[in-house]
Length: 267
Ligand code: SF4
Image 1 (cartoon, helix red, strand yellow):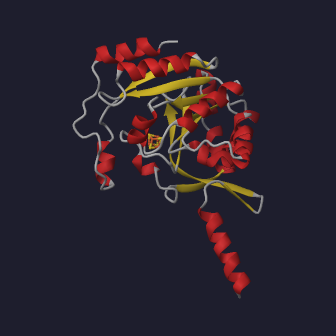
Image 2 (tube, helix red, strand yellow; image 1 turned 90 degrees about the vertical axis):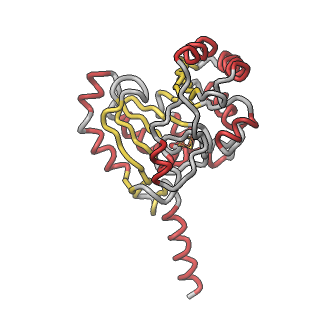
Image 3 (tube, helix red, strand yellow; image 1 turned 45 degrees about the vertical axis):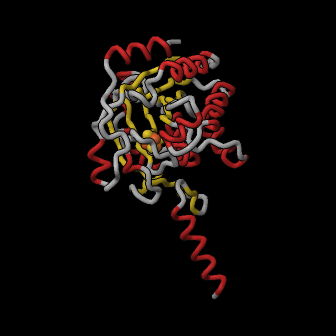
């Protein structure tokens, strides 16, 4: 009886963890949504998977409905691959591919390693859009990550704030492990596009931008830096979830400030 209870508990626990291999045969993960014609998350036309679950709580988050691990719908690798196949002609005509965003894709590293492995067999370009927020050098995470990176063509890396204390206010966590992740991607020679959300008074501060620009200059694998002007288009999602929106009243940056940031962060 005790053994049965223990088995039940273990099964339930395993079932709620993201990206589990169940009995070694079925690999599935919780996915928030799928966009089949993305044009802003990597080169060309992208099939974009938004994974469920994130450890950060960014004050400007556009997808707070991806935060909870247990939400979303479960899909297997095989189901996603079958769906992607329908869109292959679009990718091939535009040099596009598949981007996995979120939420935080790296929470699903095992699942994505298997998915990307299958996609590479089809010749699909693969990209991860990540904050690196769950990066750690623990052996088990590194094993999954290395496998995933071996099938990853591009990482869109969100660097949100270089100052650790300001980063913690902005996202709920400090940033040392995220900048360590950036170093690791260089070590692994993975091409990176840096993305930086420009928020007046929060990240749009010349001193912080210069420090971030100096950091980016130390990385030999960064191909591009995108400045993303903050906007309020997702505030309604916070309201629908009954959450207070922390950046209430903050306006998008002016064109001049966006140009200023682009100049400072230019490669
Ligand atoms: S890392 Fe991305 S998904 Fe997670 S809270 Fe920040 S903006 Fe939202």
